[in-house]
Length: 603
Image 1 (cartoon, rainbow, N blue to C red):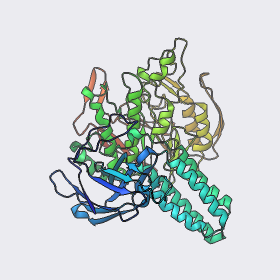
Image 2 (cartoon, rainbow, N blue to C red):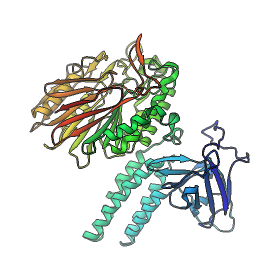
Image 3 (cartoon, rainbow, N blue to C red):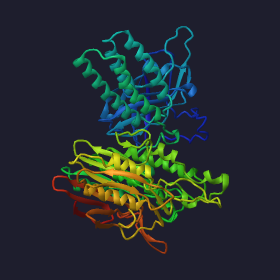
C-alpha cells in the first residue's frame, strides 16, 4: 500500500500561471504520487499521514477526508467523501480506497488532493501526482463525473425505481443523463453540491412515503419530483477562480477578535429568533478611502467573525457595500465580488443572503463613454452568480433572479424581507455618462413594489415581518448621504399600509420609474422594523409607529474625509449586529459586536 505524507503547514507549490490551461509541475521530488491502471476498483489503496510543520501529527478526530480530483482531459471531476477509512485519527492517519470511477480515463490528473472536512469547514493537503495507465485489454466505465453525495442519492432512487415497472427504469436513464450533463459544469464547490444533495434526499424521502402510502407513483410523479432539482442545478454556476477559497481567507480570524467572538456567542439568547446583520464591509484590494495602505482588505476577515457565531443564528444578511469601488476597470471589482460571495456562503453555518449597496458595482469610478462603459460597471449578472440569486440555496423566494427576496424562518413565524434599493439601470445620458449611478442614486422599481405588495408582504396574521435594505428609506433617518432616491416615498407608504391594514393604489412621484400598484391588506400587519446600513452611523427613529434602525459599518473607520477615526488593528475594527426577536412579547434586542451600543425596543 502506498504511503503518502502531507505537511499542511510547510508543503508549498508555485502558483499556476495559466488558469485556463491548468497544469502543475510534479517533477519536484517533494510531491506524493500514485499510479494505477484503468478499471481498478477498491484494491488500490493509500495510507495517508497528515502532519504539522514540526512533524507532529494532525488530530483528525471528527474529520471526514474527501478526495477531490480533476481527471485527465479536464472534462470530469471526482469528489469522493465515501471511501476513506480512519485508521488512527489522533495520529493523523487514514486510508483511502479509490473507487473504480477514479480510474475511468488514462492519463495524468490535472489536480488531485484531499480535503479534510469538519463542521462545514475544511483544510486541504497539497496536490499529489495521480497517473492512470491505459488498459488495452478490457473496457469498462463510460467517463462521467463521480460525486459521492449524488451517487448515494442515485442508489436510493434506483431502489425506488426497481420496485416499479420498466417505464420507471427508462425515466431514470433519461434523468441521470441530464443530471450528469448539468453537474459536469460544476467546479468542485463541495458545499453547494452537498446542499443540493440534501434537497434531493428530502424529495426522495417524500417519494418513498408516497409509494408506501398510495402504491406505485406514475412517471409524471417521478418527473415532477425531479424537475425542480434539475432546474436548480441548471442555474448553478461556480467560477473556478473562487473554487479553492477556504474559510481562512485574509489570514483567518485574527487574535484581536477571539475574545469578542467568545463573548458574542454567550450574549446570543437561544430563546429568541436571531438574525445576523453585517453591512458596509467595503472589501477591496486597492488603496481606499476607508483605510490606509490597503487595510480595507482585512474586511473579508470580518465575515469569518460573524461566521463563528452563525450556528446560533436563524438567518443572516450582508446588507450592501460588501465590496468597494476600484480605481480602474471592473475586473478587480468582479473578482472581489466573487471572493466575497464564496467566503460568505462558506463561512456561515446558517441560511443567509446578500443585498446590494451603492459601492458594489464600481459606479463611482465608472467613466462611461460610448463602448468603454462596460469596462467599468459590474453587470448585474455577476451579482446573480456570486450572491447565488439563481440558486436559492436556503429556499428563499425571489422575483426570478432578483437581488430582493423573502425568507420564512422555519417554525418561528418570522419573515425576513430583503429589499434591493439599487435597481438602477445602466442608462447613459446624452453626454455618454451614467444617468443613474448607484454611488449617489437609489432606485426602487414598480416591479419590486408590486412584488412586495402582492407577495412578500402577503403573510398570515400571526407572521412577524422584518425588512432589511442598504440605503435607509429617504426621510426616515436624519443622516442619508444619497442625493437621489426614487420611489422611497412609495415604499414608505406601502410599509405603513401593511402595518395599518389598509387598501389602495400606489403611484410614483417621478416619471423616471413609474409605479401603479394596487395593494390590499385585510388586517394590520406585524412589522418588527426596517433595518439599513449605508450611513456608517447608528441611529434609531420611530415614525408613524414603525421602527427604523441604521446599523454601524463593518469597515474599520468612522467619519468623513478630513475627519476620520481609524480603528484598524484594534478590537473596534469590526462592527455588526445580531437582531434578537421576542415574538411573544414583541421586543427586539439588538446586540452589537465591536463598535456600537446595544439597543432595545418594542414593536
